[in-house]
Amino acid sequence: MTALMRSASFADVVFLLHRARLPTTAERRLIDAILIAVADHGAGAPSCAAARLAASGNRESLSAAIAAGILAIGDEHGGAGAECMENIATGVGYVRSEKISLEEAAGRLIQHLRAQGKRIAGLGHRVHKDKDPRTETLFDLARQSGLAGEGVAFMEALCAATAREYKKLPINIDGALAAVLFDLGFPPALGKLIFIIGRVAGLSAEVLEEYLREKPMRIRIPVIYDGPSPRS
View 1: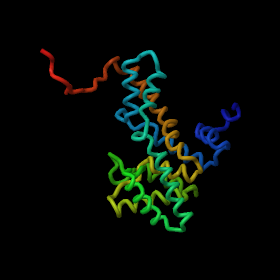
View 2: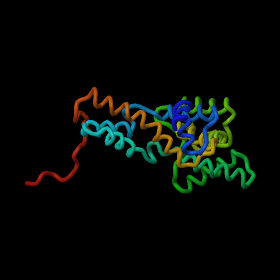
View 3: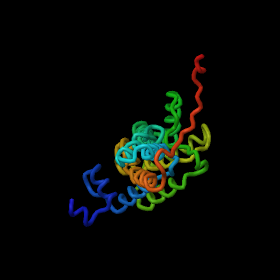
View 4: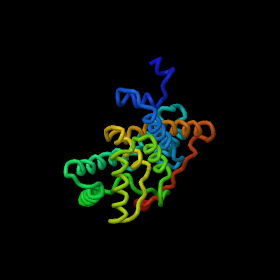
């Protein structure tokens, strides 16, 4: 451990813990980029809002506020990366087992997801309607390092197939990190775990700001009562 403290980065250790080896320089750069991309999206994100709300009501426990933020991470917020990695594995499996093109495999996956009533994880964003700049950056880094493989290629084929068959949706950061992590050889669960690892850094800043700059009990959530009328 002391040797790692002198020579390794935090991204090195994250990689080491999950792969039992140190990353190459290129692999380290990609893990760093992912951790940076997911660290903080502003106080309005569910994890950050939950952490700040807990910090507003509980001024004695930093850990409780951070835990509240982590508990807000799920399938709808921060969890799409894992689902997307599973979809990539399915699509690439079609290519390998049935000797079909990435484009054909992407179309088949879309049909499969539609039949199950599922949305396509990793595509679409509330703010970045045209393209997610974080995706472009991450894919550029993967290509420059020679590590972009079937995961990146399949996500781009899936994006193109969706535009043809449904509507144009950009690859979001969940889809981008899923593609890169797939190409780095990680299992799907890391798609959510790496979001949690990176997001804790952002949560710590949100909670500390709440403690240092805001008054306790400042957060009010507007609720309109629509229950039974008052009893006589």
